[in-house]
Image (cartoon, rainbow, N blue to C red; front, side):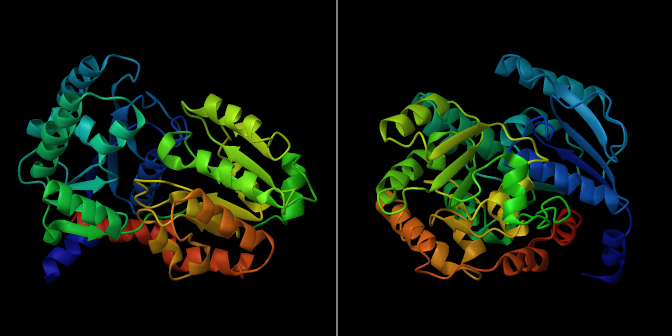
Length: 389
């Protein structure tokens, strides 16, 4: 990088971001990622505009400009047309960088983006493949999503950011994006929000959770690929040897009723608690109340932000060897990565941890690992370098 370019990167910049929904109203990992990134860039004195769907019209004390383009409950084609027309109406000036995060909402505005401004796409996963796994789509729908919407969007972008090498491989192999355009930058965690400031007992008292049982915690969207059904089966396997184990499940999703029925059929009524939606301020308390967080994902886990949230709260994490999750834990606690995604493998690791047959990192070490490697302030600066390169 030459001297003049370095000065332009360090100076205040204008960054146009196209996201999804508004966190915490839409409490997904992608929404949290965009929220944290845009706020950290604004804290760097950058002028950040976030465009999206269902953004608040007026939000006090928000350091970024919010531009709502559509409502989420409108039919998809109407929503896409609204995104296009409202984006066109609200354009003032030319940004220094454009940052896209979701192919479907980026697609209608590709030809409206100003020429000569670098476009960076944050690839959070293969959207067509993920949606195919969760709902029954016909082949034409999947083909349209992948070939028309995703591929056209990616072909318009100059560079890409992925959260893990695993998703870099998908972007390269499935969408033919050259590695020279792909930058691997892990996700970050707000270490001030996700704190280790309570003892497990204090946290359990706050939440009215059992005080004298081994507690597992998972915070997931309740959809098939998250593996909660496999976790319930694993729990049933270890219950004869660890009868007082207790699992708290935070999150909502379309398979919640079937998961609750499964827990009942497995005889786990006294071992499992479905918490539903857990407010963001309670999430750090829940992590601190647990002995272990569990990420039993079965596919398409590009990174696993919940792993960082738990570690920042001082609680170790057990995960399956899926996507980018092992890239977080391999350097820190490789013994807590299961051998496979199978129920038996999850059950075996859980039992080893709960019976103290394998060592787990201390709460202080968990927290320090995230501070050193995944603090959002540091991660945002790495992303900014790519956006403005």
